[in-house]
Amino acid sequence: MKSLRILLVVHQSLVPPTSLEGYTAQQIDEWRTEYDVIRNLRSLGHEVQCLGVMDSLTELRAAITDWHPDVVFNLLEEFNGIVTYDQHVVAFLELMQQPYTGCNPRGLLLSRDKPLSKRLLTSHRIPTPQFAVFRKGVKTRVPAGLRYPLFVKSATEDASLGIAQASVVETPQQLQDRIAFIHGQVGTDALVEEYIAGREVYVGVLGNERITCLPPWELSFGSMGEGQSAIATRKVKWDRKYQQRHGITRAAALDLPAPLKATLDRLSRRIYRALGLSGYARMDFRVRDDGQVFVLEANANPCLAEVEDFAQSALSAGIGYPQLLQRLLQLGIQYKAEWRAGYG
View 1: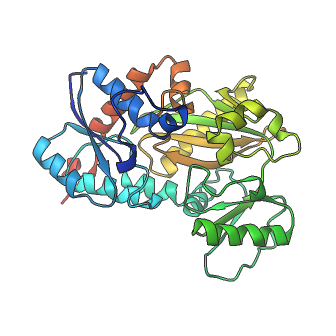
View 2: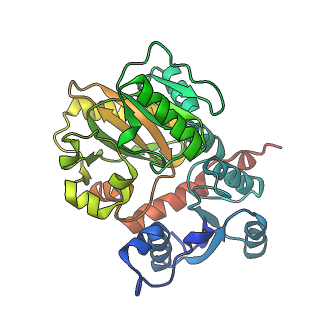
């Protein structure tokens, strides 16, 4: 690929320094993805500008108008603190007729709204746990069809915000208490779904019209499953000492029978199409002991840090980190947005 002019768009607080020297591991974890991406893009010979965005698009518009980037490398996960607003930033890029990496606005809207995405997947007969939505400010009435244990989480937030061991409930009172916690402390509607015990397996997906599925990756809960619910809490995802204490690891999903691998591949492709995703995404599954597969959610624009699941799964498929970033650039430049098709 020729040298490109790339505008790297990140959250204002996550603009990385030029060096890791002098920073703690905890500090580095905050902007590890941004650092990895910008360092590798520059090592590939691209010209990169990094722009921090918080609650205004004025600077983004000026950068596009004045600098004329070939592509925007989008690492935003929110706008003004609201997760579901990242889709509007991408829609703005399309209005500016600016190529960008990652998912399109419609795919972001559908995948970020977890209840809506689950309804869509159910309509496509894609297996997902039974669920109910409890609106903030509305009296809680539990549907008769839900079976305990239940898993309570935010209907819109990601990165395991609001998820803890108390999220798995086994009584009506625990359910009422956890729904109240999501409403009051997280500030969103609550999504309640049947808790599926089993292996937690992720499948990365790359592509626009043509799709590539990466090898399945697994979050192993180690000793945490002894007396605790095996769920991806914030501690499980981000607390290194907690991970080491319980032997929590992420690695290639071993010993998956060939038919199960084929099922994961097929479901990942169907989910990607059903939600209108593009660029790249990660599908989160639970696999029960009997081999039954349930999709938990689809994550558009998952974490791209070099040490995280998506990049490591790509590496196991022979796609090194610099090559992965190049692939994402190509997908962004080649994506057929409406403005390219001559609409309007």
